[in-house]
Image (cartoon, rainbow, N blue to C red):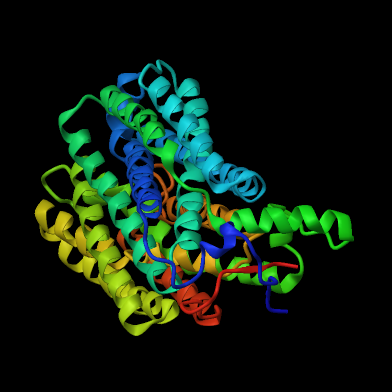
Length: 439
């Protein structure tokens, strides 16, 4: 059963969401705040990819194989935190509002990252990576949901793409910071930027659609037709809704094959390729996310021109398959070939903004923040099984597996193939009116 539109609502809250609504100062401020919030989110999220080796060495982990094993464990812990945080903050976003969720998430991960600068043992690192991941989970989904709901239908794709592009520049900035600052100073900088953003968010307007749904939910308690808001179990029932949610996750999953394997373990891939110059994580993140920024701009423009989320994602998935194949042909020629091809692969993952927009558009207002916040974090958490499969395929020094290059290429192409099938089965949402409820 398709979601049903909600009844027309009266009052200033929902009237403010009409497709013809002009852009005012408060709406623009909301977009800017969401964009800068995602900037800090991405800055903090990719810091561990950059700081994995120097930070672990600083607390006593020096063996190359242990750097990979402990690094993967810390990444897994952060991603599990994001998975649980996505569910928690998504539920809170639908129950208590998009803005409160944004405030809470940014405060939590900012404090965790400041404390991360002072770790002296692996267990402390594990605890703080979990807490930071839990907090980071709430930023993107709540921000995208807010922007999608307050902008006119014809402009929401541009708005969400703008949020993603500015946010992805945070990853580029993290690459610069990781190159020139000490690892603990990077964590301090990320936390301080997050706390500074809380001041900017004070004047941001709440979503009119959310306010309207909250009012209808209050009315439904008296007439016996209860409207449930922010119940994660609603994503699992009925089965057709659960299937829709699964397709959304699988659509974005190839992005985090690239982010969880190729970006994070780039130094290991460089050694396997016998590149003479050591591959630097900070440079990988800088060039890779510079490509992602270009890709996100391109996907946003393409989505608006062809007026289709699905076809845009499919084009990028095909490009991703081609770019992964070329990466392993060109990158072994040298370090700068490696960085250049990372940028190309990053550009091909640039449909992330369109993916998150699609996730928010697939579900009704009473479940939208839950879906839009949890779906990207389920995608990120897919890196846990993906990296586990990758490590099992390539083996270790004591138990060698398949050729690491061939294993990485094959696993990447399988992930992309799954993403293509899932995207093909999703409904198109470009022109969808978001004023509806899930029953």
